[in-house]
Length: 179
Image (cartoon, rainbow, N blue to C red; front, top):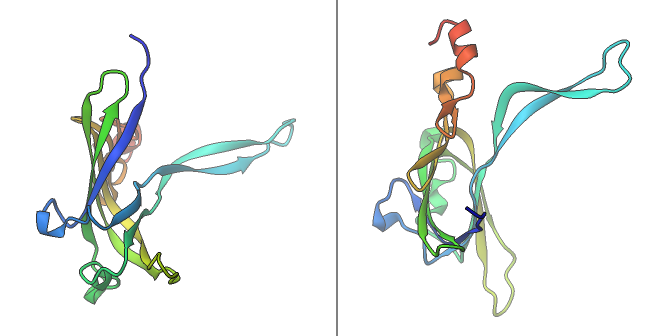
């Protein structure tokens, strides 16, 4: 079967779970679903002729970032709430398979803290928008259709990371007596 292209053509953001009253689909301008990055360290052996970067099997989850049109009085108060609590953010999207024209759902659930709320410069006829960053992500779940693509649960330790439904650190969890 030939390759295809997948195009995210629509997106929605819910502040919390999928409660329709928390939907931001009319105000959403941009959104960046968190990516992951493995930490590395430089290594140069005493007799080696080249240095290498060693993967350390520890990861950084990049922030969820989004921009909303104008002021948003229901979202802005989520910045540094009492007790600096983390809340859920749910991203839903529609991905179109360009070859088959199938619509595929994408869903990301992110639990984190809003650490940035920045209102843009005002410009006549453009108004303003507000940019937000969600950091301190301790839970992250990403689905493409019905397939689990990323599962991350900070408090589960090495058992809390799956890529494409496969535990990436199962040997570590076993050796630490956690599996």
